[in-house]
Length: 341
Image (cartoon, rainbow, N blue to C red; front, side, top):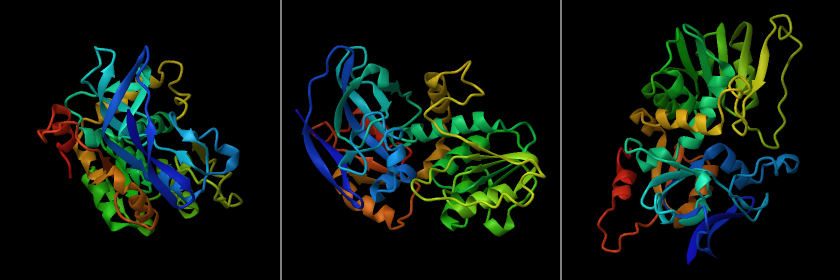
């Protein structure tokens, strides 16, 4: 059995390769992908060769093959249907932290079963929604808080969608790009450009992956407030001016990263609990505003070049050929096209 997968060969260059696929063993299943999502932040860093060698091993994706800077098979937002293996799972729609590949064999423990109210295209956001849940656990916004999100990329928009459900006094998304600003408004936040952001925030979530954005996030804090930093800068250094009122106002910057459950919840919640929260959040149709595409797997090398050059879209959906030879959509394919923007 053969499989097709996207590989980054070297900085700025990728291709779709064919590989031999083994049969599933005990406790494993064969998954046929119906959709996958491109995480622009991390995947474009990999595409550009911008991951520092010092953290390359720590930033490995769960089913990554090869090593950075390449050749490497990297990615972690895949949705599909189980085709073989445990009879109790065959036919079930699932999410898996797997690279872009049309079929793959993984342990059952790597799968999250999808409910009917989460279509395939939206389900690719689950990995990013899990990141957003962890950030909320890190930042702990409270009833009536004044909150800002700086940067409305894929992570910032997912975080905004969750924050918009909380009883906040103010939720502003600071974003210079008009298209992304419209997404923020559709998610229930107030969009403002950087020069118009309101200071005095209780917590600011920084997601712009830029030095200027982090400086702005600090400037928006009230006394003794905190920036939750979600950006991954790769090999780019960041310089901050901490010689002004940073200490006098007792400001703080907290790193938030999804590989470990937030210390504010780790004693009571594990990774499965956190994913269950993200799965409930994924039922919100407003999240479809984050999706772009779809683009077939075979066109992914060109798409990555376009995204690296600045093509629009927060989460670009990758599509895969249907299993039904007669062209009649199966149940999971109906889900793949539901609520598609």
